[in-house]
Length: 357
Image 1 (cartoon, one colour):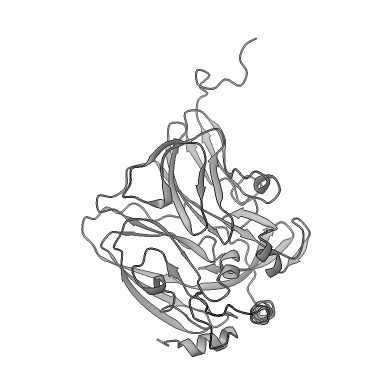
Image 2 (cartoon, helix red, strand yellow):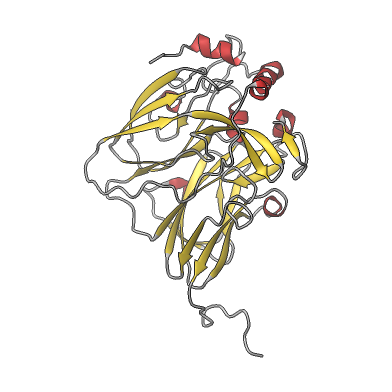
């Protein structure tokens, strides 16, 4: 194992020695530092992939054991090029090639043994800050790696809940905007209530130098990010990725089923107003907290950047149910929507779209 040093990481970043690591800079990266990073990304030969949108159903199953154990986790920051929408490409930064990064599931009291591998083909240093970590920087300094380096981190999951993890290098907002965030779920010792399905969704903003829909390569636009004026606001990394026009709906369920959604706002700047059109969140754990009573029958829940929510809904009638940010221009203009399809018998006693006149 090659252990990176603070000096080697900062030199690779192009950041002066006065800057602190892990995104907590005494002197923030300059415009020249940022331009060096962006240029390095663009000049690097990145693999082109068909998809960065994480499969929303790719979630480890509920934990059945009653005692703590050690859970091995490997995260790889992968710099790839993919389409935001048809004909529009962008240089993403990801964990394990997907946005959001892999869903990590452990139990309170477990020990997480993390291997953080920064591939030699990358252009930039990366790291990870776990909000579930009780320790300096959430592990960000311990996992600071330049391309070709590997770091190890071991931590105990001491408090239950759903927590974001994200990159936290200088220019952390750029790295998060490009896709570097995810969820770690720490189940309580008694486990989670049973549901029929679980989904994993992550919202973030993408700032580019072109208008949405303009074909060709879109470059990251730091000035647009400073103004907090994103070109796209997306779920799972791509415009309308989890709809019939994208990679297919987030899930197909049966009427009567319950679906628990783990939702994270990567940001880096905008708060999501998370809402299920045609439904409500029957049970919702604000901030992903599992040690408070859930809220019930919630129509719209603000989820701030760097936070999560756990929200459960059911489907008494069939149809397409849209999960959106209720800042609706982000849905209509910028791509922020996922769809869950419920199949089953109509229930005109509950919902009748064509009542007799």
